Amino acid sequence: MIAVGAYVLIAFAYLWPPDFRNQSTAYVWTAWTAFMIRTFLFPFGMILAIIAILGAYGRARRLSLAVLPVALFAAGPECWQYRPRSAPLIAGETVKVMSVNLLMVNENTRSIIEEIQREDPDILLLQEYTPVWHKAIQASIGEDLPHVAFQVREDSFGTAIYSNRPFEGPVEMYLPLGSASVPQMRVVIAISDRPVAFYNVHLLPPSGLEYTIENRLQFADLAELLSTEPLPVAVGGDFNFTQRSPQAAILRKQRLVDAHNAAGLGRGTTWPMIPSLWWMPSLRLDHLYIAGGLTCAKCQAGIGAGSDHRPVIGNIGFAR
Image 1 (tube, helix red, strand yellow):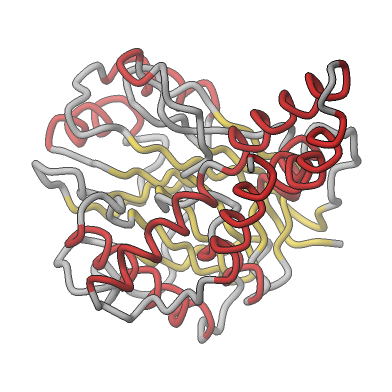
Image 2 (cartoon, helix red, strand yellow; image 1 turned 180 degrees about the vertical axis):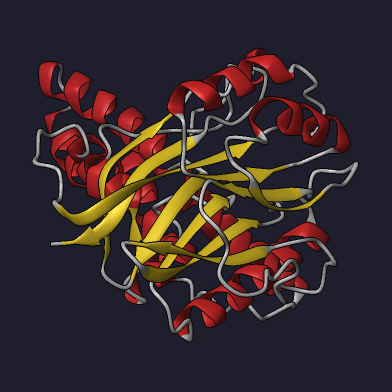
């Protein structure tokens, strides 16, 4: 029964059609269930792997053989990220991009600011950007990253982009993602004298029916925008989905590469990172996607002390 149930759950999660514009309550809840199964595939796979190991050394070898393939399917891709490999090669200059979800209620600004200063990014993407954070960032690193576009808010959806190189053309503060009036940003910054579109996004968390519908609409609009983006693109932020989600699969089909998959080591999990959520399996909800000839030479998760997210830090440039 355990093996059959595992196969049925995963088959359902992968075969359910991802219609992100369908707002039917029954459809959305079913799609949400499939999404959550895929979100927690790694811990599910590790549990099945333990069952397979125990069965192999006990009297349940048939069970062990039955669950082993699904355990490998569920946990294998993330375990594969621990393999040694060579970093992709970059032609021309390398730009360090750092994306940080600051956590709106976090007023311990010093720790994350010190981490940003240590990492010394060329381009900084910030989510949950509040007036408190704006004041602290401006006072500490504003001179180092003088080119800035921001929208402060008292809720979780303020956002900012800081850069040590100028923006080319107008800044788009409110990309048309979904129906919520929250800032989602696009700026153009040159790498090796070539214009690159940088997106800073924060999709709503899929919690509750209203937010889940909005999250799905936001992603549908984002995927459409990226499919028609004429420039090489780097998209960073808090996506609220993992690399095993149907959303990530769609971005891969559009030839966007997750920088961590290209040049990261291990799982690179970014959430949750606060003691009150110690019991939750850690997930990678924050990403840096690149396309249009860009590659990543190194990608890692930071510390993010005081936030519930760890930053994503990637060294990107044009591939040789």
